[in-house]
Image 1 (tube, rainbow, N blue to C red):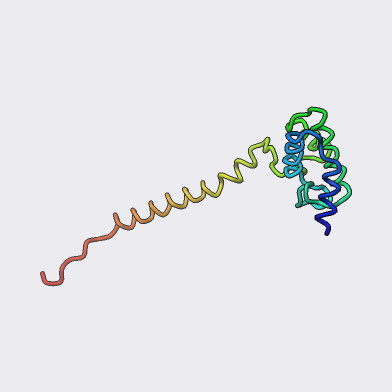
Image 2 (image 1 turned 180 degrees about the horizontal axis):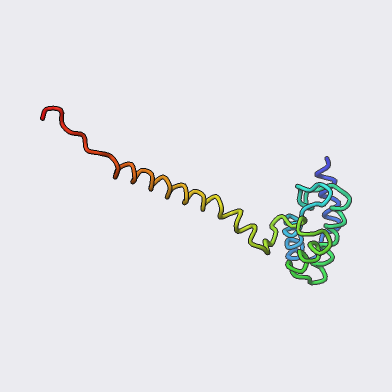
Length: 129
């Protein structure tokens, strides 16, 4: 029932151009609802999400690019509103590469330890001699 109500209200506000409406819908899936926090504005029923959807449609209808729409919302609500943050600093790179780096370091340590054990092992003399 709620989905039908949302579909009717969303359809009433839809852009006339189907290509623009598809762009607006795609952008709505990329923007986080600031009230719900883990829902895109396309699925949220919060009042602020309705306002955000309307703003996306207005901006797309006026000819704004996707980047301009994202930048506008980021300037207003912060980088949190983007489901795919830009990652301007090296923190994201470090967080993604650190586990792989630790895996390589651990592998090198294990290789060095096994090689040292093999080199330090004394040959066993036969008991018959």
